[in-house]
Length: 261
Image (cartoon, rainbow, N blue to C red):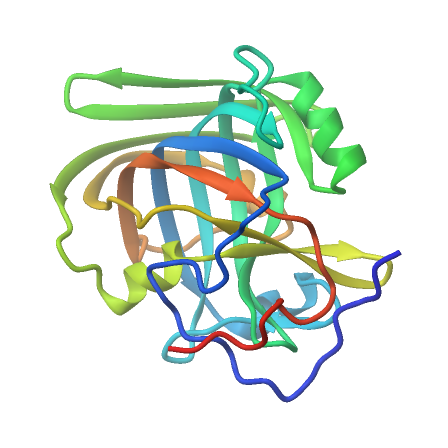
């Protein structure tokens, strides 16, 4: 059994566009496609109590962020097996926060993960203790816009929903510090046995586009136990996607020691 991640004095690893600890033996492979990243700034004190023990809010210029990220999961596969064509491909929408643990590892904490396939939802909840919920969802392209819809089924709360419509714009040649901070996240922190474990990932650099938020109607953020977003988002981005590899969950320091800039 993994031990909880302790709080130590390690400084946070630098935010890097490439994974600081590439995975040589991935546990899972998948693709994340047609992503919309919508983010609002929040006071770190407002979300600190929602993070797993052993982690604290990760901040940039004194703020942390809540993200609503909608995309298509594609071809989830174990080890080096071929991706599953039906159960491994589905729309997903996440509500996420930003975290750092005592070893300096920056990550995300998922508050909810809506997905349209029941089998992956059950596997995610039972096998990884992730907050997956079963929802009716779609991702549709209409002209120059991409629309993402989600209506929750089980386990609820019933009535939780989202509708995002974005218009992708120009490709970003050099992302800003904020855009790197929000997207270059090389793992997740997940509650486990009174503490947290870290599930790493790696993938090529994000191809990012700035985007216009055409429509945003949702209550997923509030349903995830967070204050409802106020005002305009601080960042709206789109990406056509990347292939992703996920490693084994760990509770100790990363193999090879701290990452170097």
